Length: 212
Length: 270
Image (cartoon, rainbow over the protein chains, first blue to last red):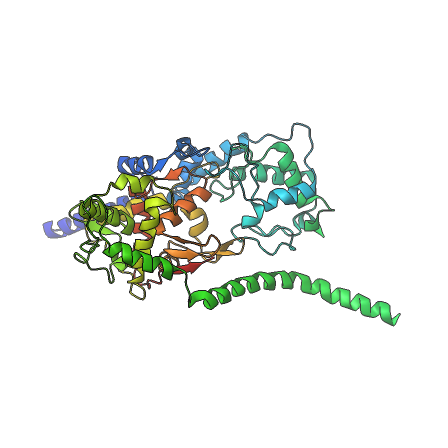
């Protein structure tokens, strides 16, 4: 091989290496950016119950704020770690009861109120379920960000497996899908145990309108 | 026997129809809203705000008792026609990327001697903000029908766009929401409200292109700053500061994504 060929081979090799390196950095986790952090910090003020602690991200929020990395092959390990962390925080019902009152559950599913800066600390927080899901099909005003839950129990039955999965999913959806769009209702104390039992009934009680 | 059969048949048909009818209902509701919009589009109440805004633009005010007629919105002093279609943009005199409201605060300060902090602190729909809302209505009406044409050529504009993109996906609050939770997928709804996918050109044009708008449900004219403010309220975030870089960045992200779309402001919204 003459010198000229050597040189061009070297050039091609280093170019290929550079391309690989660039691609890797394109799917690495988003770098910490002081300028961005300052912009966020200076961008908000506390108002009523909505304090500045709400922009202090936890590990899940930080990870999911970078959807390119979060959904990449490189992000898989971290995704599993986040899911496990959320799963470990779920508590099973203290009284062993999973199914409450579907009528109360329907009211919780209907309300999207609470937790904004125009609410008080004692404003009841709704589940906001209909914002994103079809549930009882009699309610025509439903959102489509989440899947339909019509006939939820009728289609799945109510084995302990289904019951536990549904309980966990309402308590902390991120236990199954690190960056699910669904709020972590128990983790952030948006709904209490009894309210979650009531929403469970709406989905799983054979007498609930959802399962007719 | 005959009767029972008919009853059974009717019930059978009814039950098979039920699942269909609920989706048709939802569809109809969306159609009805569209029809309603069309019906009142001829008399968009924003016109009242525009008229008031034009008067405020030309009326001497503030400690310097001056008008806003020499305000430079990016196309030169006093040029209002088409100005809103190219905002946000970088301004040399302030060395900042500014949206319409931020720029109007600069003009009020420089030309009229007014304190921008008073504007920042005022609640929406009241006091100085009420004036701002009217002036915004006046300015954006003079870009209606123009192409959205926002530049990221200046390094500060490019930087703002990138910061805005990152802010769009920034999750926080007790519900883990970001702008992207609702506005990063096609064809989604909250209840019956269609959600534009602001990460695409088409969706961004539907969002950015129709705000500021008159909101029928509240009977108020809302500027883009108020629109963003209410998004963050519903995201359960703390209160976004009026005219902050955060709001400039998000506006830059949406506006640049919407490039090529049409300015339809003032829009008419639910």
